[in-house]
Image (cartoon, rainbow, N blue to C red; front, side, top):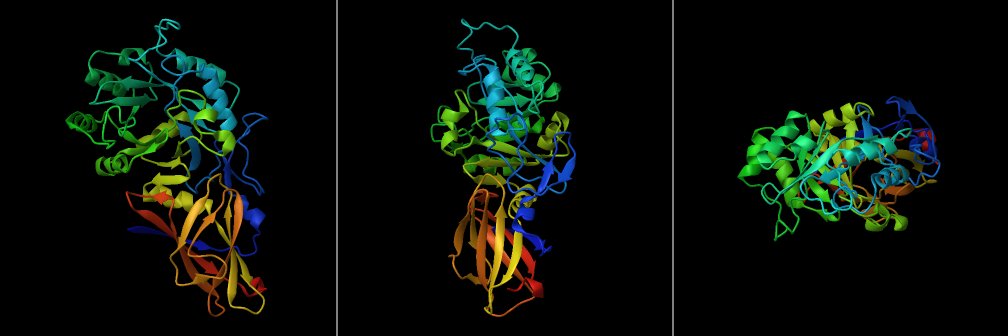
Length: 399
């Protein structure tokens, strides 16, 4: 099954460097146009090792967010300021330290009656930077309901209750965005199949469950994605990191933590929260893009602009360039009526690269449509998006 998305390519006099100059967002929430040969650095500090760059959309700022992680204030191995430093080095825009409420293996060494302490320390460590730190916690229960995160909370302490439904009700009363964690976790689902039970359905009915992790750590779940689609839940992907992201995700060797791309009105916590409730997300994991069509297709479109170079010599072979300024590769499959002169029907556009594509149009055309199935895009289990480009060829673009 394929979903088709259309875009038109104009502006044939642009060069490749100009195409790399996508919408970039300044950190005061405004939009600007810039021509860059490399993706813009977020500017958190002078030693940023940015792994995340995705262009803004016409109607939204694209923010990379990680809403699930731990420190020594539950079962993690690092102080909260390390989570902040990691996010700054990797170019993450927003994080939430979500400590287990009920599970406190370090309590004898680090007693902390105030369950907001990790958030307060992380928030303090991020002062003077552009990283957004939001308050969150993990409601940690047996299945059902299993483990659940509540972010954008006001106070974690009253959420620590004996009764699970009371904990959800308290989080919801604080205006929290609440999502199911790792529903495929084999410690609670022996078969690795994510499923909901009557308690989950009751929480959804009472508006006390709003999202679900389709990706957690190194695990992706088709079944969790289907649950999200069936129950109209927001798609979430998180690192759930307990140690160091460098080690867990082999960042020095080109890896990256899973993140949720949030498409917000501006770069503020309030806008991120609103976007989460409006399901304005795409998950990025191991160079997979997982999302609903209305947000997945636009981010794929914005990430892969095409420039027409022109016909080669006296031939009927048209050269175009696919410009990828992001930190992710894309695997594309030709869905048009034309074949390529150098490439097979399936090819890869490497991260931060310009891919030249030679199209055999059989005759010289003034316009044509080409299309690609994005094989590393996922709309639903076994369903990939297809994007189409309408190209216009000016006579002076012919070589």
